[in-house]
Length: 136
Image (cartoon, rainbow, N blue to C red; front, top):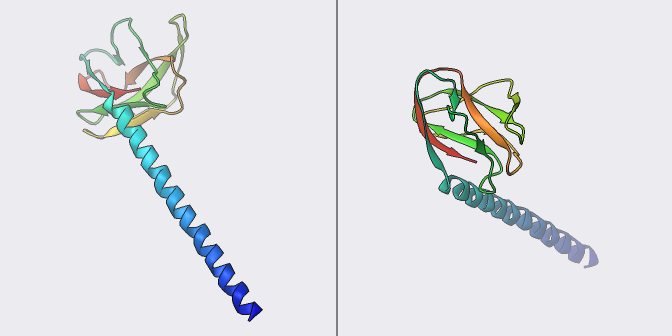
């Protein structure tokens, strides 16, 4: 009888542990989806003119905000994009070594875990005009 009680207790404990993993995973996925909706819900449009590689194309800089942990872009046509980071004084700090290819109409993370207030520009591989949305 004691063996049967231990077996039942072990099975129940294992089932509860498995259920908590499933619930935890579902909760984590829901939080990530809510964070992405919040990030993209605060997105801005951009319009890069032809003849330049950078957006913004003027001397202005974008900056990372608390809206997103990453720098994201949604281009209206597929493009190759990377991010160049600038020092607080405005001088170029460094550019990412490689481009990431976007798919038209889909969000793409270009840089991850960016500190709020970090200044940056998008650098495109082409001088062709580009428009879309940005979230950071």
